[in-house]
Figure 1: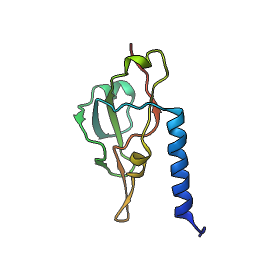
Figure 2: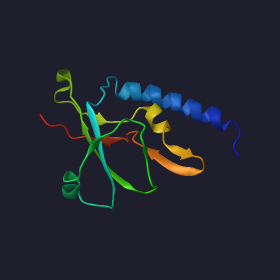
Figure 3: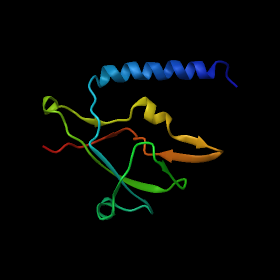
Length: 119
């Protein structure tokens, strides 16, 4: 076992937060977050026809390896027009997933992805 593992992880987390603030100096919350599933692996056109329900960040998902589809709506501030916009988690959201009581679990904490914007 490596010594000072927690100390190293904390330093890396703080470094990530500082770098993220430099890369993405402005952030905005999403307006709505909806979820559908669990479902088998399906194509995007099939996912569009699923019944979506509102969900709060941090809701636990399961079983392990289940597939869920998320629908996210967000308002892009006018002064961001023409700029690249990413859908990205906060470091705190990333830490919410993990293991609970020896069982793997996931949460609706968002994962990093690029979100296309519509004018």
